Amino acid sequence: MMRIIGNIILFVLMIVAAAFAIINADLIQLNYFIGHIKVPLALVLIITFIAGALMAVLFNLSGMIRLKRENKRLQKKTVKHQQEQQHLLTSQDPKLP
Image 1 (cartoon, rainbow, N blue to C red):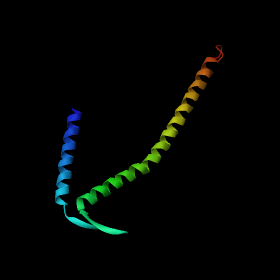
Image 2 (cartoon, one colour; image 1 turned 135 degrees about the horizontal axis):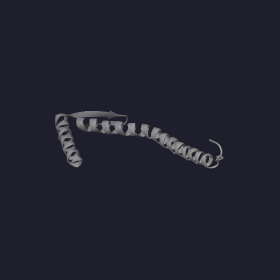
Image 3 (cartoon, one colour; image 1 turned 60 degrees about the horizontal axis):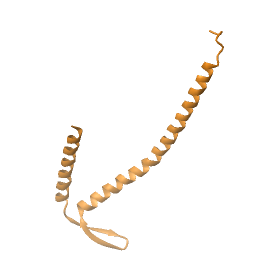
Image 4 (tube, rainbow, N blue to C red; image 1 turned 90 degrees about the vertical axis):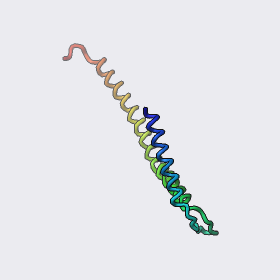
């Protein structure tokens, strides 16, 4: 069921993207340092959107790596504490309450 919903959402997004490209088919002049070219506005907007999404992923990647390292460190610390707790429970004097 989820696969069908995913395919429907993908199809709708493709229709919206096609309509977006048709509406923004006008040629614009793109100036850069050594020259200029004429490209469709839709292409410029799509490339800009993709570049922004990639930059967001790269900026978040460092934070994700840091969190994974911290998670691994805390898991090791938890195992160490559990082993210490088990050792203390097994080494207690049975006469004590």
